[in-house]
Length: 147
Image (cartoon, rainbow, N blue to C red; front, side, top):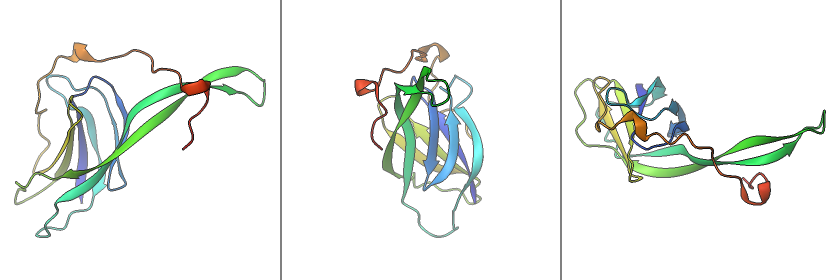
């Protein structure tokens, strides 16, 4: 079993991500010294078995919609996460004693995955000020989207 570590080089917080269905947690926007996330347990790995691709699912966006409370009839905003999913090729350079499974989310939308022997520093040194803290937009028709 390999610990899952996420690295977020985008300008928005990633509220949740997973590798082959195993939760990787949330990932803050990286800083020059931190990838943005911690490590979670675990993704399965069998030494010697060639692993080429994994399925990465992540919260790529979100929108707000109105919800009416059944208790008070008060109307409030709720956040609807919008997920994307992609097959990602794993870097071929696998160490003799693998410990971690890294997922790197890049600003151009690409995703890279690697198996490493230790938790690495971020691959990109980007300024923390790039983080977009603006509110997500409203959902179409101010309603929760289907599925």
